[in-house]
Length: 156
Image (cartoon, rainbow, N blue to C red):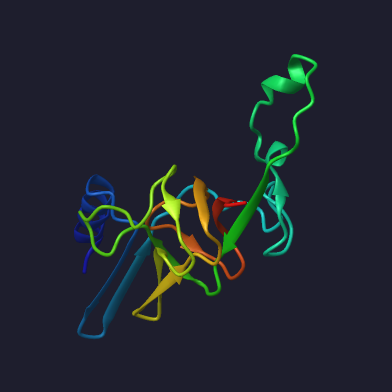
């Protein structure tokens, strides 16, 4: 593979928004991995070790009641973390609707996403009933062990 072919391949991958590509032709191997959005720091603002509840004020939500001088009890969010290293997918296949969207009610055992690791698709299930408040990673993003994936408002 010459430089021109390689340059055209890279331009094609950028145009089609492909983040990772691997090609093996004879004894030549090419692996291209484009930079994505920066990953959040391991200790993010969403909380401590799973399943410790996190106050909603830590999520960056504007508390209008506090601004008005009225005290309101802090909301507690449950954080679902990745049990493995891999690639995050929000739906079972490209073009399919996501397993869950912000605002959806969730049940214990409900599939939230898939994490691909070593060509195996691992379903990540919700471990608490409640409402999905926030997705903390983007579709197709590489994720780390223990990385925060979802914020859930548990049912009381």
